Image 1: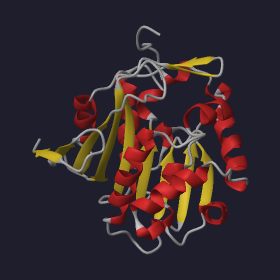
Image 2: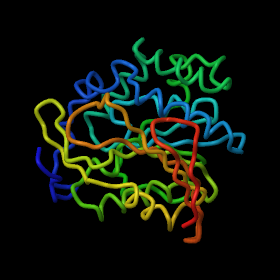
Image 3: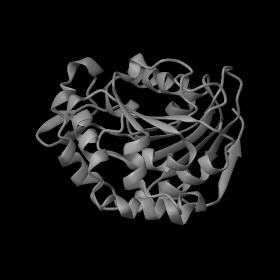
Image 4: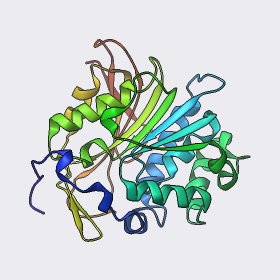
Length: 268
């Protein structure tokens, strides 16, 4: 593919998404990039103060269970909010028939934080997960206490405006003060799943930070780069942590790349 497709979300047949092909291509094994992101994800939630009966959401999980798995120690319920009928069916089957390949992702979480050590994800996921079919643009405001959104907003449209609207909808679905982790493909120029082509927006770190500035506080962006890319057609990944705010005046921090512990901070 030579460039991002300037098309909107509604122009694509998301029910034709090949969930199993996507899982096999991206999550059949634990990649180096996941090993960079998982500790950032787990340790961020571990440091937050969350209500006793917290409700979590993972927006657009597709064929990826590990963001939901990462919230297991911190949430009483976890909603998987998914638009594609194909992905909804896949998730229902996968939650009830947890495949052993997810164990490597779980062990990465265990190595990152002691809170995971005594949990059996194959047993707990079916008890706490609720799958809701719905569009990201229809998320209810202020409903959840923590959330994740992995590679969704920039991967459902070719329009930056829709990517921004989707990101804002995700953050505002959380209650004020609720923590979130989101990831973005940097410079993605579209992607193929099975025999279907899907759009993407070539977002940059500046785009992501600008979108979040009005709806989130305590934002830290971590560039995640490695020679081991999942596929051709993008420049790297970005993981962002933050909390939902109700004001536009917030600090933004830019974390270091490649999963190191060094961080550069600056104020927006």
